[in-house]
Image (tube, rainbow, N blue to C red; front, side):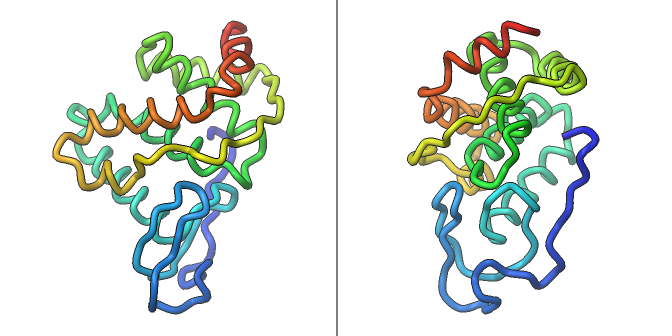
Length: 178
């Protein structure tokens, strides 16, 4: 988010106990991966291994903005909404509003980003929202492995947004302020 620096855990920090044996289960998306340890985000609750996959997806998207640019907004919003446990309500609400605008209103990604910046500058509001237990079966790993990155990222975003159906009315009311 603008104005909020990304703070990574020191390299070598792991939520898995520090070893490279066994597997980990991401607390956000429930993705099981071989345990490697590593950095995570300071409030997006994911395993280091899932966070690393997300970094790979972002790197791919940044390498060819013409090809992958349309998926980037969906990728960021889907990942953040699928890993909500330790986020401040501000971040989570912004990403949920962005998913609503992208998926329900078919707004262009650039417009959504500008609208989200304006929403944040305007001070919100940011009501607390309770995360669903099931946040969808499509994960960042599916996007990373997909033959059609853009279509899979969009399907992922749609599935994550459906998982948040219990707050759709609240999010729609917030989006109406834009």
